[in-house]
Length: 329
Image 1 (spheres, rainbow, N blue to C red):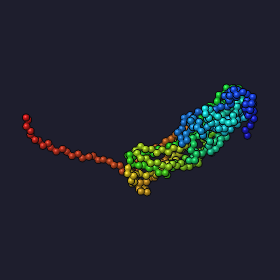
Image 2: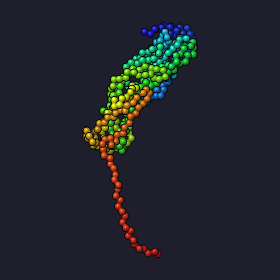
Image 3: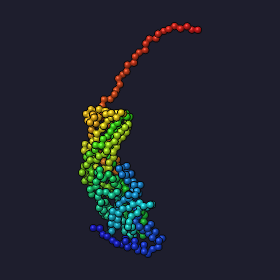
Image 4: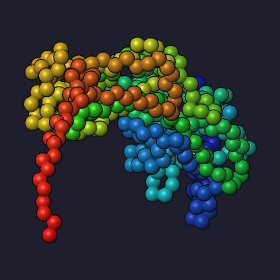
């Protein structure tokens, strides 16, 4: 149980009731606990979080921290951007001589973390990153504690790091322009673990443990009209070790010509132009703040079609010259 204190509230009331407007402004600048933020190496994700996203209307970050005897000065407190500064309510004030620690994260997740002042860590149990939780997740742990001064305390500056991985499956139309490759809406990415426990650390986002609960990721497909057109669904996933053949991609292709007529393919179903495929993702590591792309080209060879080829041509020989004498004038 964290110890509560009314000291901060008392100071706030005393300052407001006993000072002039000018003095209140100085307190707000120098004695209130203020914040600043930086997001390192922005990940392009389904809902990317960078500094601009943190400053957006529904953005902000959540802060924990305090000092030894009052370690919950901030207890999942939302800090958000308003006009030209980071704000929160109600205000908290520095207590001179106390050693403060801070940790933060964004956005709100399916779980609320627990804070440990001694280690200055946030522990998240049962974080989900599945089809219903496609959110970028960033975390920050202040490296050095802050000893509060009587005045001129600088804003608490967080450096956020991304805690998840990004996966992209890239399917390319390898046919000539006009041949239409339709990836139907049965696209599915299977075998990815979607839940884990996370603990923040200094100098990095944190560490994951007990990653499990495999589930499917799906997407609605697309139609690729021209050579080089790309279908590339992206997913945010929990960092994990991928075993050989454990993660698979399954999808079906419908092939039509420039007149939108079915192109028959060996083993095709439906109108004879539908074929199902499976991709096995190679073994490896998906690490935090990294993106992984797996690409394949859909062409006639993949669909079992016979390539139109050309043999050596026959060139007919010229006939003999027919010599006709002429007179020189």
